[in-house]
Length: 279
Length: 316
Ligand SMILES: Cc1ncc(C[n+]2csc(CCOP(=O)(O)OP(=O)(O)O)c2C)c(N)n1
Image (tube, each protein chain N blue to C red):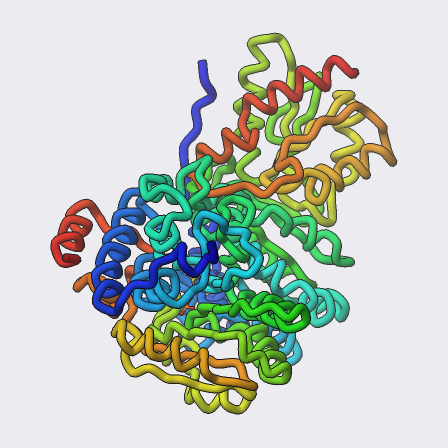
């Protein structure tokens, strides 16, 4: 049986419903651990949900399947969204999400390759994921393999020089089996991107490095996200970057565009409020 | 009867406060951070002297180069991030732009060791002392409490040459009193003893004092030394302790070998070979968990020091 038949691809309507479940998981995990990063997990929910439930060609029961598509969460602090999608697609029991950030757990504070099967790269030190993605994508080309590689970065993360070293290299190598997604939620840790280190025109920058650029107006709109991924698959001779304009903290009213929830857990009352909103 | 001690501020908080005083005193101090000012506490300086604070975004290597440039302009830069990021991501820049020309750059790494807790291995810094000490003529300071952090922050501003200061996230036990003085290259004898010496740094200093207190009941007399300056290391103090107590334990929140233990062992082997045991992280990455749980699991407690002392005394 091919792996494609093992993972049912959800429709956009089904994905929208699934994203609600994922958001609830994110908030519950972080509240339970009393630590973690809700803002950047919620902004990336449509992106990661679309990947795991529709776009990726993967087999949760066989995480080491050699022809699987690869996904790297370069902004590793947003791992609650990844863990939820992995659990909900069957990599590990949903129950285990409760062990997020607890001692002796596989569900580490940032993704760890040696702890949890299905994690493609140990991240948490920002800026490194895209380089690893190039190795995976170029390795596929050199060996005639058909899998695709997806790397999710933050917009703050683009401050790291290594991102631009890898951007230059991927453009040069014409890696059309590589997709970078920028979760452009306009905030980093100390504050707003426009105040800390403005990025000016991101599409122009990636264009200049030889990438095919798809900018989506609303990266929290599932249809737009799925369309962007599908369009990226048709592009030949260039890597694609999807610049997704998202809202940090999306889906929980008091977290939206409130950078206090970059790396802070909700109180029990705030948790209850969030779960009331996420239906 | 357990040793009584008070918890003071976290060393990162003490650093933030002292940095404001340093900024008041030295008008040419400039502070750089890599999008972690709220965590390293350099934000305290940013609030007071916004015109002398530069947030470099998430670009540690760039920040180190900028700091080197600030020296050339006549300023004294203090650059901070998490210990793991400033040392690991900035290492070649520290090597070539700071250590090689021996520039007056002050590097500060917060959230050191494993006691930062839930964030897990990627943020935990267990290599930074080793990396910093590997650089010729780098001064490496690891304060254990609020008072020593404040004093050392002032001291590093006055000291000419590159310095690395390592701070931590959790509240730290109060070891020193106001007015205690510190000197680069001179360790602090905290408790005298004659059977064995524990040379400790950071959070392990209080654990060493607790261990010494417990062992007194067993009739074992333990000397405790705070080696807050890991480089240049206090050779005379180590040689004296080896000679007078005949056995040495090192204790640190860092990988064994690369950090304090290796540097002490080198001095012991050269001056006065005596049996040694090492308390630290043993060739592994740690993980997520509550700080206390992690210190227990990775063997960084008074009881581990007690066990090591029993072991080393058998070899005397
Ligand atoms: C190399 C490195 N430096 C600093 C940090 C600390 N840190 C964690 S998240 C973050 C901000 C990230 O901003 P962004 O990429 O925009 O993520 P998002 O806003 O989507 O959470 C920082 C500075 C880190 N994890 N890695």
